[in-house]
View (cartoon, helix red, strand yellow):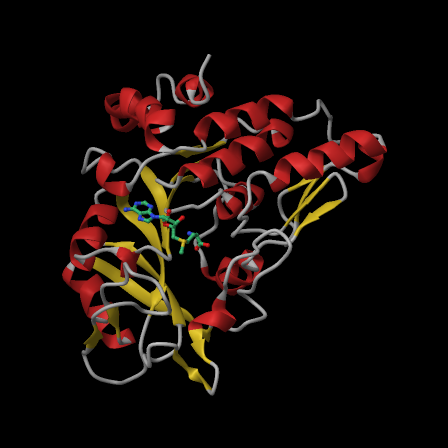
Length: 324
Ligand SMILES: C[S@@+](CC[C@H](N)C(=O)[O-])C[C@H]1O[C@@H](n2cnc3c(N)ncnc32)[C@H](O)[C@@H]1O
């Protein structure tokens, strides 16, 4: 039994098989020691996780609740905290695991709070979350009533974090697969809602990314898009040469108008801007669970409206749109 056999059992005889069976071997290959030096260590850590049964799970809280402190004894809880620390850096969250506060780099709950009231109701929907990290938002989507959520993310540590959390949540309705969007066969319109948050600016060809997302949505299905934007009324794009906020792989940051024009040209309709926010050091910061540099180190110390390289500081937009 491998880590993804539960996923394949869960989608048996559904149309999702047409999307995910062709990549079954790839999923197994990607999640292997061939692809990360720490992989064997993570597997060992997963095996050591203490057997605890949560008396309560609440996926509809900002800090996702998995169990109470009283569900374990002090030595089990100490071991649990030490083992979860092995999966650092924890970027997306927070989680409250048997009383342990996993205070992640990002307050991902803030992003959720900005968008949750603007979505078509998630009840009973089949949802794809592209670039889902450790699945924090996938779990919130399930908490909001979705029927099934598939997250994909090529970063193996984040997939491992999800597997560790799901040891205790034990949901069969959310799965996080070790895949990039480009790994999936195209044009399989099986999802009611597709999320792409924090991914578009990492793609060299944003139109290609949007077209590809559209190919996974059923007619009339909803795209939830979150990405970096720049201020301005025109149709301009910032294409940083070199790094942006110390990130090497940021390719295109459009104005909101340009972003809307990209959505229109890829056949999205009913485009709504639901939020524009400047990212603050309260929302993205280093914590006990993410000890590396964070936003504060990526901004000009004398002028927080600029990145350390002199570009406009991170400003993010959330849009929802329907497949036309
Ligand atoms: C900035 S994080 C955003 C995480 C989460 N969606 C959120 O909004 O909090 C971007 C994530 O996208 C993943 N990613 C990068 N390129 C990707 C690709 N081509 N396909 C799918 N995911 C990708 C990264 O591994 C990373 O976890």
